[in-house]
Amino acid sequence: MAWNPARQLFSLAFGRPEERVHGPRARVEAGPAELLAVRAASICVASGKGGTGKTLLSASLTVPLSRLGRTLLFDADLGAANAHILCDVHPKETLVDVVEGRLEASRVTLRAADNLDLLSGGSGFSKMAGLSSYELQLIALGIEKLEVGYEYLILDSAAGLSRQTVAFAAAADLVVLVTTPDVTAMTDAYAFLKVLWRQRPQGEVLLVVNRTRSEEEARATAQRIRDVSLRFLGRSPRLLGTLPEDRAAFRCTQGRKRVLAAEPDSPLGRALGEVGRTLVGELSRARRKGLGRSLKRRLDWGLGGGGRNPQGGAAVDGACRSPASGPA
Ligand SMILES: Nc1ncnc2c1ncn2[C@@H]1O[C@H](COP(=O)(O)OP(=O)(O)OP(=O)(O)O)[C@@H](O)[C@H]1O
Ligand SMILES: [Mg+2]
Image 1 (cartoon, rainbow, N blue to C red):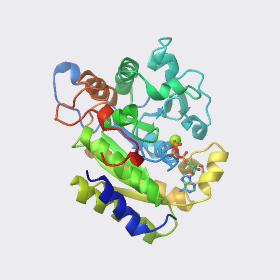
Image 2 (cartoon, protein in one colour):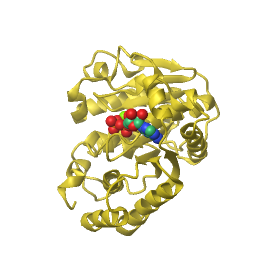
Image 3 (cartoon, helix red, strand yellow):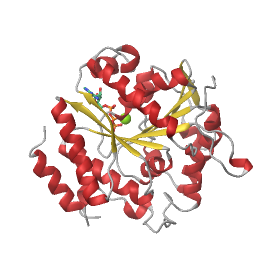
């Protein structure tokens, strides 16, 4: 309904593309006794379009967070996981073993650095990209048990609007949506917002604009997404920060390093540090729902599993379509 006008606005504006230490806990969610366990604050790093820099950002954010408390990096690019490369570790056990019933999730975490563990989604398993509701429930149950042992959980998402990708984002305390100034990435970021907020109207989304070539381009990109979202979705994501195009990204990827650990004084490293500081402030105010617990509940309700949204919207199955497939 609001799809075509939004797409036009993007095009008009831009023309052609160019780790166990228990630190302080912020907030405990009130509720029945069995719900009082303090769970990791969860951040889902997502994007509509692939290749926007989600893994680079997720891996770097583990640096400031793991200094504050035990952190879990959950590589939820299921079947095509690669966050382990930037952490320079080689997971033998992955969520594939959980989904296939061989291991519990707690057995597939791997120590990646001080105060940092990695939970890998497995690489080279295409079936992991389209899990059944039962298989997603197995993952949700595993994370629900794991998350009481961590202060922070960063989820490095797969790109796009698949049922499981949106289900993870809808279950997280905060979503960090990564785009680039590329018009297709902006358009897909808008599509992601539209689908996510249909699933979870109150979902908190923070925007990161990556690979910017000037401050002006960074500001214009953020403003365009915020304007279009406000106009067609009635709300807009707040800007978490912008990250410059920087060769440090290539050097660190080739060297199997996290930018913020290896090159904190590069332009990209400094910008990532700023994003990390702002995010820590946001997380101190976030309500910790528990990613695994929240995902399990949503699946029980049929959300992310092909049922109806209790708030009246279509379940994610009904809402997911390719950004290119026309008005939703
Ligand atoms: N600010 C930047 N400057 C230069 N290169 C960058 C920057 N950010 C990311 N890249 C490069 O872009 C490529 C994609 O980054 P990354 O793998 O983090 O994206 P992604 O969103 O996780 O991709 P996917 O959707 O495939 O999971 C990598 O080669 C990375 O080094
Ligand atoms: Mg990635």
